Image (tube, rainbow, N blue to C red; front, side):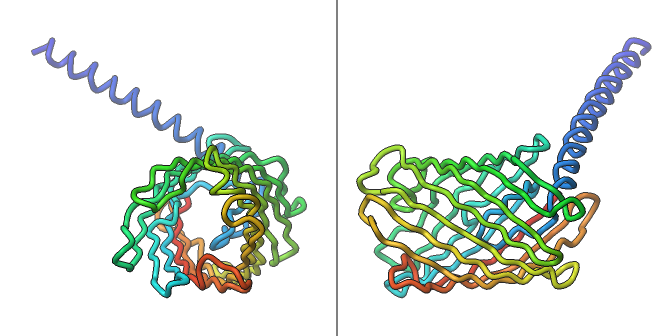
Length: 274
């Protein structure tokens, strides 16, 4: 009986030690992520443009595009996922592959490519110290898409991103270049320039207008360019429980150039910061 009691005691003590170690790890992690977020502007992440800010959240989007053939392409997930801040200057994004539903019988539905992003924040100041940020990204995708729902090759995309705020108004912008790992003669190089103009109307309301442009060099689309205007509205952040909050919003993309890969799109986004 005594031996059994001692065994249970040691098991319980070991479990308590493990839980304390886990609590210490999480406390340290959240302390670092909180410091990272406190040292930068507290703007809202735009609907389409990737924010230069470091974020810690789970995000998922739902997009419906009207293609040139007048068929609706539904994108579940839109290549979003888990975003973590392991260091005061670093964010890692682990994105789930989107599921594409074409609503066009000859075209197969299926999953798109797996992608990931690393951010490194070079400069930042919160609203009290200057209200600006400058960050570099390195994104990558792996051609895991089923049927023709992904790229022909992996793509590496270095990006420079920045933002500046003036009172309740802010601008966030990114410029990146897609570098295929193979099939460059077909895929070419896509240069993406995205800019979001936001106004913080009330504590929970963020209207915005985005300009989303892509320019192609080399490949089958060499020399082409497309631009979308994306008015949007985001609500949040609403506290749910403890650290967990929620923000949600929507935008409508409108093609404004003669060439465009789709006519227009509706974008819905939900984020759970923690």
